[in-house]
Length: 81
Image 1 (cartoon, rainbow, N blue to C red):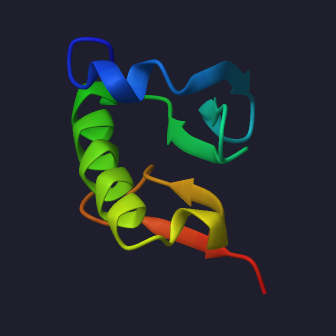
Image 2: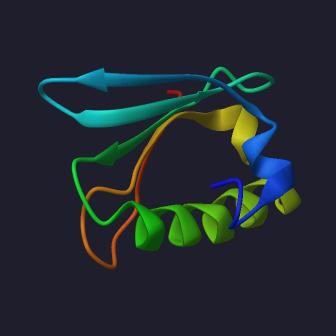
Image 3: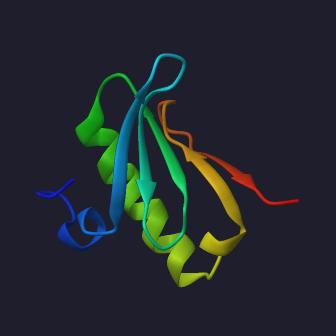
């Protein structure tokens, strides 16, 4: 992520590995888990970076509980109800 998007890299507070989800990133300001899974991290991080900036620009990050980019060509955003 550091080589893909340095500003986004600095927003990460924690990186976890969970048996059921794989790699999960947590962000400082939004307390937002991002589920990356177990493989193809570069593609997923590029894809997530685009989604993140779109949500930030549209002011939708505050409504998101989690973002899941494990699936090819699909992002699942779980929103607060």
